[in-house]
Image (cartoon, rainbow, N blue to C red; front, side, top):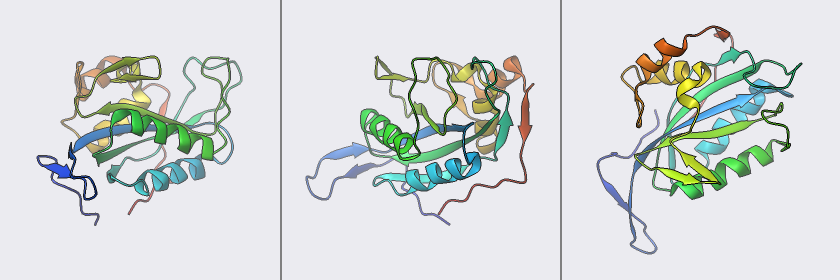
Length: 189
């Protein structure tokens, strides 16, 4: 069992003494190119290896129809990771992009192009951001069953910042095109 910090305390950096709050974060993972399951497992491992990030839960894996993708795009494997962190949202975004790059994510001008790995910050505590490089909470996740259902599996009483209960959001969106892949189980330490 992974030991996690108490989310109600403030962590002090041992080198600088700087006080940093511990925040709960929700990260969505997706892959529809290459070794999809291996890509998701690699992302979970990379997040767990990130200093000042404590993975506390990983959802079941779902397969989903591509949403808003170019014609002919393959199905996605999706999962959600819950973690506690003392890192800033911008540092977390840098880490998410680095993990995608490590799995050969090719960026395209084409919106929602197929990808080896997508690592999306959904919420980071109560942080809000409207920067071009980072929008928090994630602007479309409340409309995506492939984010809401795995999150709900991990936290039945989850609340989406500024949007309400995840169960209600999922009820409004539905789960059409989403299939539980109970033959695929992501591991974390």
